[in-house]
Image (cartoon, rainbow, N blue to C red; front, side):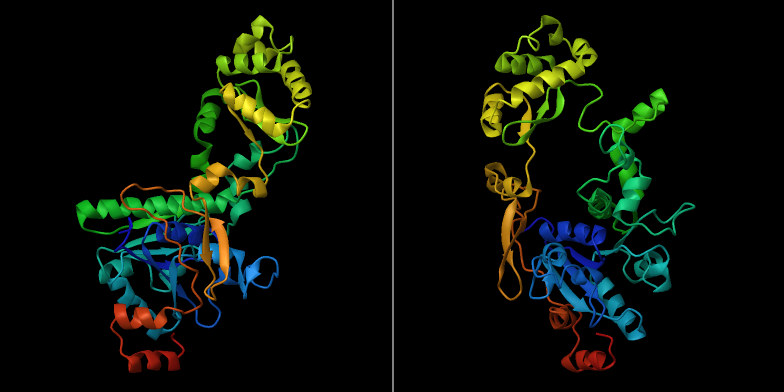
Length: 398
């Protein structure tokens, strides 16, 4: 049995943030039913679908990954007949997730007040750029908008350089993470109250939350932080250094780590007794960083990392994708998995980071073809007859 087995999720999401949230729930065992417009499907299906390097049989890397472990039904929610079918599905489900703009669910009559009248236990989640309330709730947001608006982008990039978005789309992915956490929290609350509720998740709120202690520092000091590249405002050495072969990270948080590093490199400048104290290292950080850089250029990167590991100095390679996705630790944790396209072509992709001892979640089914599970869901879950299904098809509702 998988952790969320028995939980049915209706997935109205598109693009990245919402599909990532529902992918996480599907990986954990929930039955996630993607409700998609007939003929076109949801927008993520089109992304990279025609790119010969990043697609298989007309299905791009986005949907290949985000669609795994999900089922797909087609349903026209702009038709009364389609909405009626959706309502019946809500009566037999636990969670409805969307990432439409505020107001869309109300306009379609799919909002929480409407759905909770049909099923008091239903949990709804709206994942939007700016949330359901506030003066900017109607603004459009995508990943970079959230990153920039949320403040984190202002401290990302080289010291004195232009602001830089994170390479990983943390605006979208952060929103998806908080949406998954939100619906699981509401699911637990339902255990006590017996009732569902609405979960309002904003990509912007997620970015503000991720500022964490740095926001508190600003409130305490009144000082606006600036980008400092890979340096740290408290620790030295802390950053990226070049070797003969690869870039490596040193993260000497405590004095003992620095001492071990200095003993390994044996440079007399680094071995000065006063540098055993953080304050002296902060004062002379440019001397220390420069000296370390000179020393590390004498080393093969992987040999250096082994020596640092033996000394228990916190360090890591700056891995390119090929190195990260073939790393022994990553592979041992089953973080590179193989699933397949519905046509049986094998595909590798990232695994599930949540490892459970009692209810393992290491099942990875292929992403669905558009409407692949319509008959299964409408017949087995809703109990529609073949003639009723054919009638809905004739009307274009499914």
